[in-house]
Length: 73
Image (cartoon, rainbow, N blue to C red; front, side):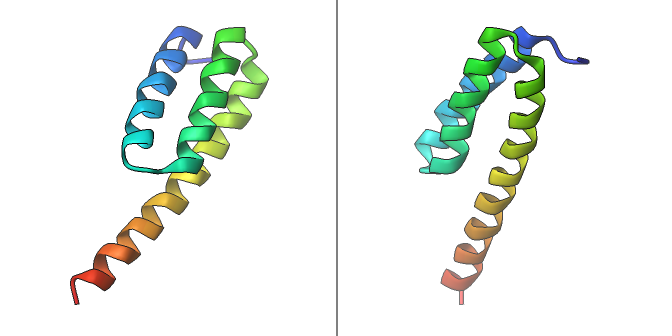
């Protein structure tokens, strides 16, 4: 892996805090799982969970932007 497991674990922990603050629940839940897999050093599960995290973030971002564009009309 290009990024160290420690870097991924720390990043997942930070993302967990931020996503919890903005009520991005699915991103938050996925970040919890990613942090755990990184802590365990399970690189296969880390890679799969990073992909899932990207999908969850995209869904959150799309929903958020839709809400913002609707409320500004």
